[in-house]
Amino acid sequence: MTSDDAARTRVSRRTVLRGAAATGFLGAVGAAGALAGSPAAAAPDPGATAIVIGSGFGGAVAALRLGEAGITTTVFERGRRWPIRADGTTFATMTAPDGRASWFSGRAGVDSRLAVPVERYPGLQDRIVGNGVEAVYGAGVGGGSLAFGAFLPQPRAQDFRHVFPGAVDYAELDRTYYPRAKKMLGAAPLPDDILAHPRYVGARTWLDVLKRYGPDDVAFFDYAIDWDIVRQEIAGTRTPSIINGELTYGVNSGAKNSVDHNYLPAAEATGHVTVKPMHEVYRIRPRSRRPGFEVTVRVIDDAHRTVRTVRQEADYLFLAAGSFHTTAMLVGARARGELPGLSPRVGEGFGTNGDFLAIRLNPSDETGPVQGGPGYARMYEDDLPGGPVSIVYQATPLPAPMGEAATTHLVQAHTDERGTIDYRRSTGTAVLNYPHPAQSSRLDRRAVAFLDRFHQRTEGRFGRPASGVPVYSRATGFGSGSTYHGLGGVVMGSAASHYGEVKGYSNLFVMDGSLLPGAVGLVNPALTITAMAERNMDHFLATR
Ligand SMILES: Cc1cc2nc3c(=O)[nH]c(=O)nc-3n(C[C@H](O)[C@H](O)[C@H](O)COP(=O)(O)OP(=O)(O)OC[C@H]3O[C@@H](n4cnc5c(N)ncnc54)[C@H](O)[C@@H]3O)c2cc1C
Image (tube, rainbow, N blue to C red; front, top):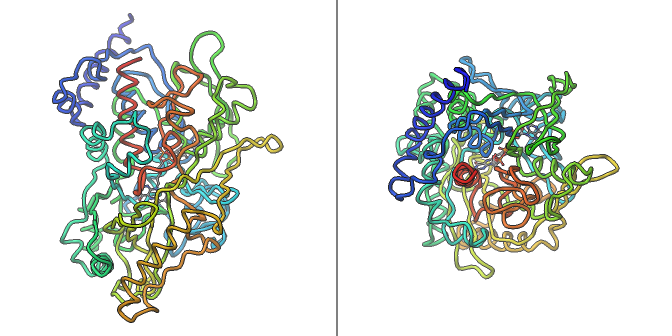
């Protein structure tokens, strides 16, 4: 061992312990009496190398845990970094979108049909226009956490068990991995003093609407928000962002706890992890002389031109490019013969998380001229034929005084409707196919029936049929015509093991939403992706 190696090993051991303590990990495994075989007990291996593709929730967890274990790790991320600027102008805004809002598409908006022209730029939202659905992803160092609405709900046990294979133990996630993920993401509920602010009248009256619906199960959940910074927004010392309902083009005040504010800097601080922005991976193949993988990467500029290509190899490869792009890379590699041993199941099981987006027009309940974000309170209705449904309030980022015009709601229901991600030889690209049109979709039928019932019980029976009218046309990007929550493609127990190892190849893992079975159980998925990646990285480090 050289003196450099020895020094690296010493740093690795310290870093493992420091990282484990910071995340409460030692306490968790100690309580379970299971220190042996845990990552904290695994000896750092300074010779080992890993590549992580993508820096969203799954990639960020992988990077941190690999770095803590002393594994030299490179994270390739196709998008740019988004440091928060003191003048509050890091990101585009909903009222004045520009190229920063969209990934080289030349258009930005809630839906491609309603989008406005912008310059082509490596911006935040990547919209995959498939056959039958649009799936939106985040792009940049932090991935979807830059664009996400910061909702961090944990699914109920019964809803989780409805979608996940029995081999995944909800109780273990609940005990160890959800708390760890929440701690890392700075998860916190909406505080009372902020809820009392005039900007949050819409959140407060949403509770009145739910009371009119009837006595049901209302869940209050956490958000990846630094509420002290929101208090500064209210005080006028930070750029108003969250209090304007601005989240999905990024949060200029810095209040969003995206993974570039927590997991990724912690990974870099281990000294073993290098994050490379504007590096787009386009080829994966097994290394020729010994076990491991080689990736080929395009270094891109702001006009999406290739500046140069680089090749890098590693012992372990973790795909975390988001459900569409991870799956697209694999179906492409299988079709071109670069990874011929992949299961034919890769590409199957794409789901939209049971999402059905609706607005309620012209609500008679006060919502305020501007709706403060991110949203509030999920209600579960468990007494419907066909299974439970949930509905949550999301602030609508309309400029004043338009906040009074409509509220936005995500309805979620269990559905077995799934799509595929297929390789198209003629273009050499992957395509998303989701063959469930509105007329025949069971999800749509159930969600529409629920929304009609919701409207009748909260407005109609009080003589206000024109208030809170639900609108969900796919033609305007609502209903199930688009999703922010595309999951699956390399599903656990089918194309991959229950811990994310891709069938057919040792040391090749998926660590992102592609591993999940098309849904997480009637809630937004980011917390579950993070918790699952924590679980799977523990397993990797304990068993490699
Ligand atoms: C607008 C919006 C709002 C949302 N709101 C919420 C919410 O409130 N709560 C919630 O739970 N979920 C929300 N989501 C969903 C959530 O963001 C995703 O489920 C989550 O980010 C997926 O995590 P991931 O680890 O699978 O990958 P991602 O976070 O999608 O990260 C993948 C990363 O890989 C990179 N990448 C892709 N291809 C390549 C390549 N070839 N080479 C290198 N890098 C590549 C991408 O640029 C990206 O940074 C929202 C999503 C969007 C788009």
